[in-house]
Amino acid sequence: MVPLSHFLILSATLFSIGVLGVLIRRNAIVVFMSVEIMLNAVNISLIAFDRYLNQHDGQIFSFMVMAVAAAEVSVGLAIVIAMFRNKPTVNLDEFNLMKW
Image (cartoon, rainbow, N blue to C red; front, side, top):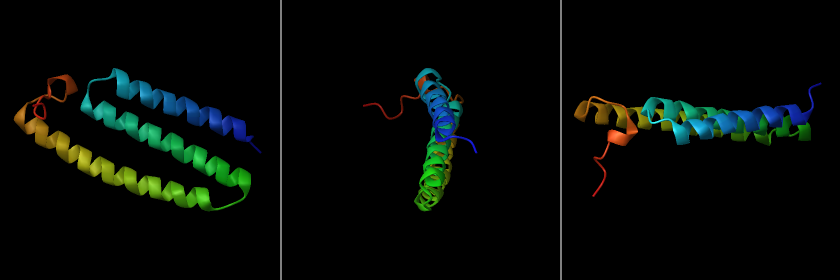
């Protein structure tokens, strides 16, 4: 049986990679992938605590996180496609359509 600490270290590592991807990268698609990595890290920790505590709440919350992630991807990609039609780039530094 794998100890809980291994799952939490994996989850923290994935979450850190996701945060770095959001903060450092300027490509909109890479930022969305980094957010998905962070959500998957949260799912790993939820399932790990679920298994450690012998309850099923973590699986339910994990399913909810996956549903929110699916909605976020569909709305986010629709926004990126709409912005790509105005400017042929996915670099977030060049999107100034929402500035005053």
